[in-house]
Image 1 (spheres, rainbow, N blue to C red):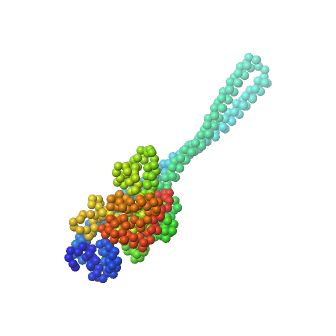
Image 2 (cartoon, helix red, strand yellow):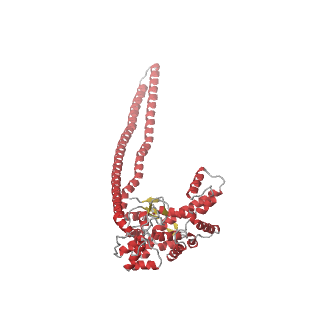
Image 3 (cartoon, rainbow, N blue to C red):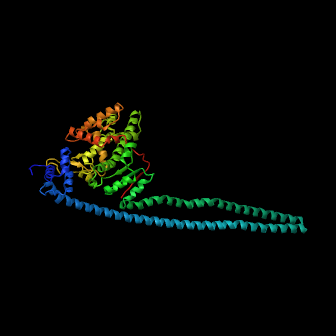
Length: 499
């Protein structure tokens, strides 16, 4: 091979030596494949890459072993976390069972006390009747005796006073007994309500316990998220880092009836958010199916961020018209001025920057920079748009020249990459023409279309105008303009499927 060739050029030359038709076709069509894509194609054709390639030798002897060790440590850590979560769940279940048993015992005891009280209250009327009958018969006999016998008037007067006194005392006593019995009977429903309260609280908590128990099942069986998605009450699903395979993703799309044809016609997309690409996406033989899967994963993320920007933009327009703003509104404005890097509180400039990125452009750049979701940067660092960094966490390109120190910015989830990309186009000085052209379309009440703005993105890549031509080609060939008016299905409830 020739000397002083870059690692990528060596791979291309190796492809020509072994007559790899796929790489030749890409080179003839002037499509710039990355080193990682070239390596994958060569390996797919069972071509061994010589170890005298410096970067390949370093990767096989240093990078891969370190990566394996790192993966083993991550797996060990995840297993420990699973064990810990399992122990916590067992402890929580034990606590809940114990509290349930105590509550049931308290409830049964309270019922027994209530029954005893009721029996006691039932005795009181019977006792009252006995006392009433006793005194009634006693007074009757007494009056009959008084009527039948002749006694002195003075003695009779004393007897009558005694009888009246006894009658008054008996009446007061009987009235008091009836009063207290009525109060007891009136308070009885309240006692029952108080008994039911703990039962209601327990019934409310039961769904939460079920959700916690089902969490590990979601990770073990990928079909569980499908069942959750099918429910009408769930409108937003966040799929975590489950290391999903492409086959599982395709089955999920089939179960939730996620079809790009329907999205194009109805202009609505379901809010299904993936945190990463399936690692075997490149294994799909059908190029069309691979592209459709990539679009289905990335489209909801782009639309969601655009809708968030539009919501902020509408709020900014309302606040700009107000003469007086509250402290919370001022705090929100300060936060947005900082986020969009606008100085001196210039709300007009903030309004120019706070606007959407056309969905067609975002999809085209994501496809170009990530190799339709198959590049090393996309799979290892969720870097869809190939943004560079000189200070933050990133992934070093394999074909980077020795005198350069840039890296490709790394993200925890795919949506963070989309947000950073949109913020980059809305704030960086290199894309001021893009923002001006977009603002002029707004002023003329025209729709913001991707094909009218691609020519302003020649600073995004080193190839300049050639890069914008490729973007136009991707948009037209894949009919990405159809997705520009697409909106999210209205979300009512947000459920996060965790591992």
